[in-house]
Image 1 (cartoon, rainbow over the protein chains, first blue to last red):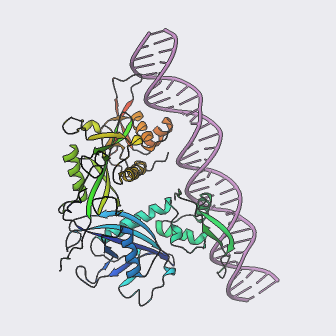
Image 2 (image 1 turned 90 degrees about the vertical axis):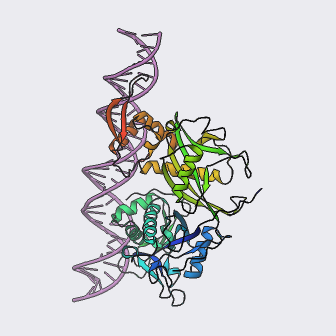
Image 3 (image 1 turned 30 degrees about the vertical axis):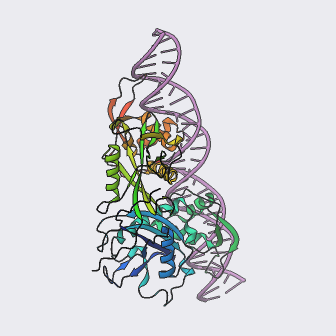
Length: 223
Length: 223
DNA sequence: ATAGCTTTGCGTCAAAATAACACAAAGACC
DNA sequence: GGTCTTTGTGTTATTTTGACGCAAAGCTAT
């Protein structure tokens, strides 16, 4: 069998929208570029695909080496192929998003220097390349995903309360949901399982602690 | 600004799942390969991206030159990057699907030779490369799409009847839907507009002719 | 301890959406 | 005209949804 003589091929990159949720805010992780182009502007983390890698390997490499994170939920999004999206030459990016509970990876001076920062998705700065577009598309994708697949637990602790899950959904979907109807739909869907425990040390009534139903493959929620 | 010295890059291809609907059957268009690898096996049409092209241009080129079709609805799907998916070397494919009303492009001996053929999606032969997987994913994507965006009209004539639309949905979703409830949901959604005309020359009662509401950007149907 | 406040869990009810089905009108065929 | 099939319209019971009432749990101040 002949091995095809490669055409001239564009560079292929994996770009990452890393979502984190803490203190009731949905954020994404951005890098400040220290080289041209877009020097001193914030961009999404990313890297070029190496010949022996799969795209998810490239993502894992970026997460590990640039951000000190591993073992994250990863989802592939669409491919950005506008010819002038990178002024250095033809580069095509396959976007991905990752979901991370920031509590798992403390921001240290070492790994998380001045050039790495969480930004509230509602207050993003103008990003370099076409990363504004990629970030906006990723958020839409996450909003859709969370209604049909049980991914919220990737952003929360293993044990969480109903009000915490409620706030997460309101935050990601950017809508307000009646807390009693939310409870009913989530429980009816079998989305989560009560552990019988309660969160201690809070003000007022102590909420029940739940864990996700890991047997669930897909759900259907509408708010 | 420095132009980046390209890494060694994998080949990048656009692979196409061309959906057509006729005689109540949803089909996809396959090519019979006349060279190794997978010689004499059926595969999806596709081509490598040229440096000056966008992916949709590559798709249009394949549709025009290999299949004699143009001006089709085109949607990008996900990217297939398994390292051994092409035995000739590292090749990454961005899958797309196209929707076509086969009535617009008659199958002629010239353009649609023995090596191009429509296959019922429910009776696909084993495909070369990882195209079984791509075709299956594309169908899932179409099933989802048709519930949320008005794309059915891409597969039908400009004027169509309620029973025709009903059969299309049953066929694509592979479920049976009560015809009276279907009518109510479609009309309530403002999905289609009655033209006042009727389809003539058929058996029994002549059904009303409708056209799609082109102002509609998205819909929400559940069956 | 008790009153007052906030948060959480549970329940109610009317409105809307859905599924299942009855029936009549239109048109073809005998 | 009678019969059959297909299409258009309507009805009803059930389920789902949205809006909200209320009491229990737990903290704080007196």
